[in-house]
Length: 87
Image 1: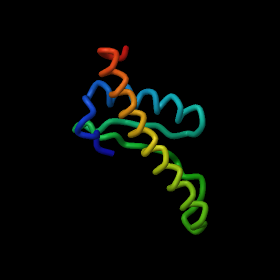
Image 2: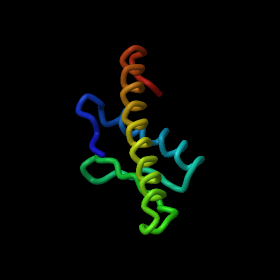
Image 3: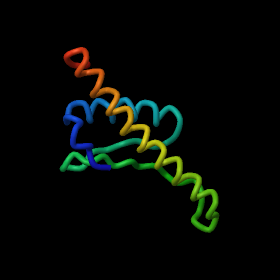
Image 4: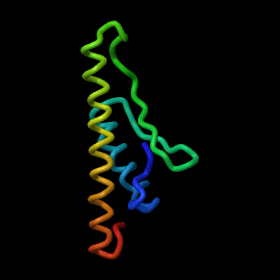
């Protein structure tokens, strides 16, 4: 998942760290970073591919997590602009 253009690298990294913490509490997945700064979400799928509906539900959950992470990064960016930085 590419970092949104309007999100600075430090905010992106902070947002991914927050998302990692929450993800690890609720599942066995987490984010990593590619050398170019893109996020990679890694999670073991719990079903075999012949269970298409379960696989679809798991993939939908991964998509929802990515969307929530992007929204969280945007919210963190807005908050940092209002407060002169988040730390």
